[in-house]
Image (tube, rainbow, N blue to C red; front, side, top):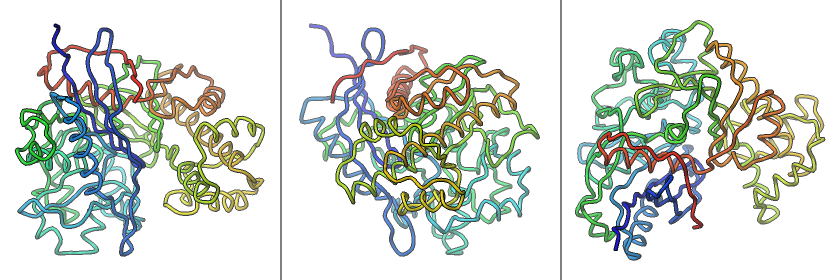
Length: 466
């Protein structure tokens, strides 16, 4: 009887839900099966916005116990998530508080204040990152302002995947894909920017080791092994921890191609071997993030489906279940509705009653007020398509490339209406899929880590029903 192929367990954490996917190499690609999925959201407490990291970790352990009870023996576990958010640990490895969400109101205006101290151009030339209030640098500056003594007691900063890996194997480290999104990493020198952090009163001593490339961080701790029933030989992979990097790693775009990772956020970018720090790059719209292999992608960060996700939550509280399929089909019928919602408008940045914010926006901009969820969805899709088309044009201008094709990956690749509007607005070809690109990138990274850079690739995907 032939041996069972290696299994790899991917935990893929998004800003509105997380899922666990089991992947195995099969002839021609990777077979993927969903083992669990949960919605989650940041919680308000004492004026702040916090992630329930304990709830997420509890759910992960449940998936692991269920897998063990079914006789599933993963060779490795990988974790990816959104970037920039972090937890601060004391000397005994305990969290000071639950990790704050990047949408926490105390971060508002911090990007401008830091730019006024360092200089916007210098900040971009050092870190290569888009200037936004949500970066780790902005969050730490806001934390220091709220509690000047915080860093005297802090031992280690770990990003969300790092924190969960630490819980699994007891080892502390991060990787290039996450560090490059923090606005604390010197992209040309490839190290934490000690000088920048010193100027802002943030100790470099709390920052973890940064790894480039996919590797094994450790093995499952005896405590977690006993609690879940999984083998203590299960290896914990690191290297492709940022969800956008994981999704982009499934594509190999040509010189005339871009990639759009379409989900809660929409990240439109092109792959480059090294960053170009050009005066033509607007740091408020474009920046660089790291790929697992050490290359970078020049990106435009667009708010994405966040606005409609918030709308859908409000509608479901009022009207009951409203599926994405129903919403998109209804928006197709409302396609003649000519209103456009600018996804960058500050009114849409925070949690709240999003349908009401959209109505206020339409009145403020002299547009017709949407009357139904379908007209609202149509207006959001039209605005996103416009933003995508503009970003394609600007990326081409900055890079000197003629972009003729965009690969749309992630959950948004299933949205035929949005992709058709994008194709029409931009005058380019849109190629869709895979929808589960992030989980696939996570699984491939685990395979590379176990193969110790053996170079084997898994180019396609076969999705199994949950």
